[in-house]
Image (cartoon, rainbow, N blue to C red; front, side, top):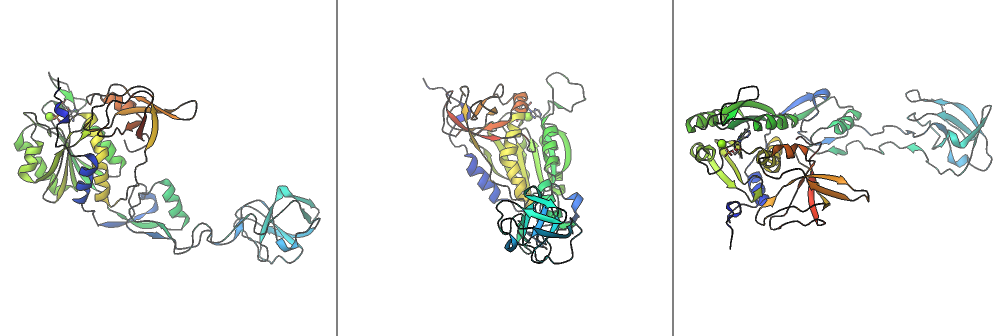
Length: 413
Ligand code: AMP
Ligand code: MG
């Protein structure tokens, strides 16, 4: 007997294919603005950054010790201490043959010296210093431009500025930079059953969680959100909202109404007022997904199911927003882990099951399911720390098999 599974019908678009197609239909914004250092975190660099200076800009010591000339070093040699070089207070004379200078970490190497011996390897007697052990020329000296040379490209346009990037930019002395202007996204939920948290629920009603969760993700990505609230399942109201949003935002993100139910109007209205590119993906969760344009405004219609909405946001909308914002996303990192329990999977759709991965006592990675895998169960999504990437044609996963996964903790969601 064959069982009919409506979720695995042929003609579904493979994920990578859909993503590539979608990205090809999006153009990055080109507007940029000059922004001061403190406002830079989470912004996207508009230009390549070349170092205006050598870093370090002068030879300096990597240790607390004595700066000397390697040529003077022979067994039992005593060097005369002629001064001190502190960070920010260089020693201004030359070190001549038979001499040395007390030097601290980060202090400029005095002229004439080429090597620093750490103080633990020196014996001192009055103003004589006896270096001990084997010392090679240039030891413990940080050379000019050793980190970055003047003119060298430090970051590429499209880099998202995090705290580490910001630190490097500061170390170059830059105080303001051109970054892309932030994207503005119009966000709305569709559904007669939806109420905002804080309101009383009537019969058959539920709380709108997609808009709240998506809003938080967008904000963490540095995007300005225009909250269009909850729109009833009424084609005229949906149409008005879509047209208004297309004039106000760089992109529109909706949830709900993209499936084949009687009150699913999103796709239909998108076809009416704009252009639809595709809407059925070989992805689980998240088969129904509408992508298109209204005028020139890109439109992303996420499924209403909260798990499907979050997963398709990550899989498709996140890379799309990066493209629009001019951000170059690093290739996603995936890991291999051992399934510590069986995972049910039907061939036909790529399945992004929610998992909890952990390091096993032998150091390997093992993964279990994060609660129930139904796309209606969002609590499992919040418990998960990874998404499994179960290949489109793969069937059930037996305990002990290797699976591919992606970590989701610490990201924007
Ligand atoms: P739909 O895609 O509109 O057919 O909705 C699919 C499922 O997701 C239904 O159970 C809806 O009630 C639910 N749903 C739709 N929108 C939301 C939302 N914004 N927040 C929470 N659940 C939703
Ligand atoms: Mg609906």
